[in-house]
Length: 320
Image (tube, rainbow, N blue to C red; front, side, top):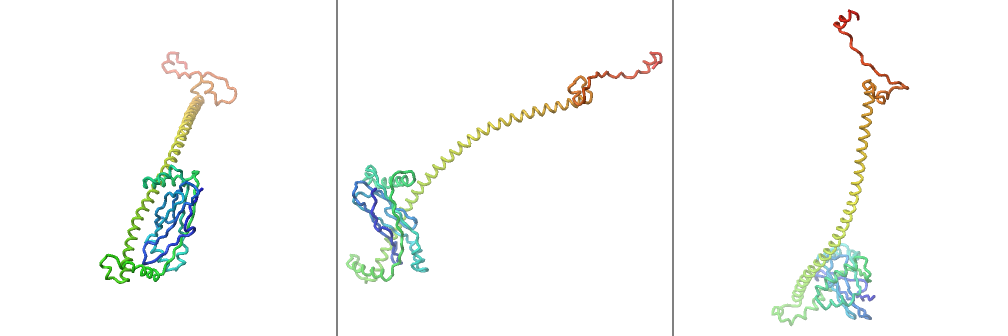
């Protein structure tokens, strides 16, 4: 696999100065040659809000190179300078900021997009890297990590460098420059440079925000698809469990009906036995003699005649 040559190889150094806005560092990616395949690259960082990388992805042809510009946001530069004022250089040496340069070869059909619309190429690269880094891809990817180091330059050396560059503007066509001394020219140049850097930082920041939102949208789509798949699987599983639960409830209902029938039969039997024990059911041998011990024989009970009335006694001759 063709791997890119990266300069610098291991460390990116950012020089911090109060008078100079937007510290930047340049990184060069070079195709080593030896093959006719194009190599796609992508630059990542552990602090995407602190650094602005342009371009952060692209294609490099055989024998060509690409220069990457990395800018440090002004707000974070001030934070680092405050740490330097409190703790010195040791406050900056503990930085854990890192960059990761990923590269992989692409086929000729994909490489042909480099000559087309750059917006389409950018979207194709974003989709390709999401697919390659998602897992399960067989495309070989080369990873190179670079550490970040922040150093603070002396204000005197920065002012001297600005003063040395100022005399070159003495022949500028602007009429006001003729009446300015080198110090005023240096101040004017510093102000213009600061405004330009702020404008560049603002435009680059907007582009970086767009990239972050695009990546967040892609990640949200993947999470949504996974959530929907998991929910569908759970609903299917619960549907099968409900069907099995319905069958179990039916069996339980049948058991309850059988129990009621047995209970009703037992209650009727006990009621009949009680009636037989009171002698009110003499012709029911099973019920009437259920609680009688021994081999008792059935005896027909004759009804008792009522006593004779006085009229019946008189008619019978007065005999009782």
